[in-house]
Image (tube, rainbow, N blue to C red; front, top):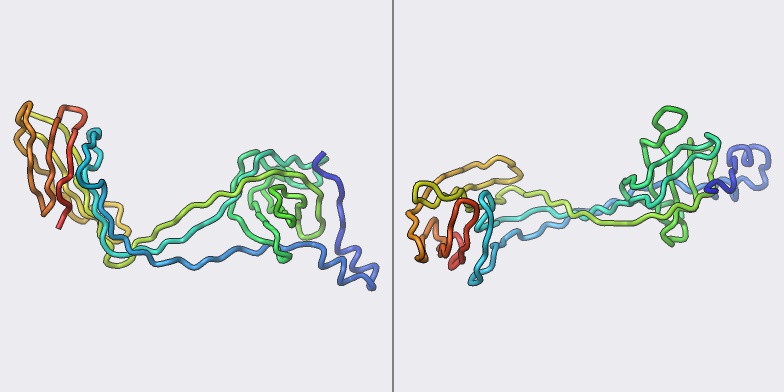
Length: 240
């Protein structure tokens, strides 16, 4: 059973004034973990010069990034087993539920779920692992009581990148083979724009069984084989 003990903290504090400090301090509280973003130089060219690469239609032959972006690591937790509210006394959570990792005021790991199910509605349920052993041993609901649990979890990290002013990404993508011509698209993306701020389609003449070298905006590409679905190529020089 997940529920081993239920402790009503407010009642203890109100009835026994001599143990107010001990009882009240025994209930942990959730604190978010805040980490400042780090500014990272985004300058990067992909792929490397020299080797042959094969990719499908729509994929990028070449990517160049310029400028800076703010990088922030966000840690989250995933429950490895469900939390079942015994006799409806506390909320339930399904296996695989994920939320941001926090910490308790006592220094342990903590996680608060705002969408735990309780009596047909959504409720906030906070879980605590003061021993940091990978098991939430305590849950707090409504700030009135704590419940003993034994819920395993995993911690994982996501890196969030936010382009800063002046960031620029250039891409060269393959658009297939049509009427004896190899088709490409060149695009530029500024800042955090999802849509290209500049997009240009162009094509080169295909020569069967022959390598084709072409230049575009400073980049030099050698096409070794192209068909309707994919292309094999080598990057000889990056965008200027």
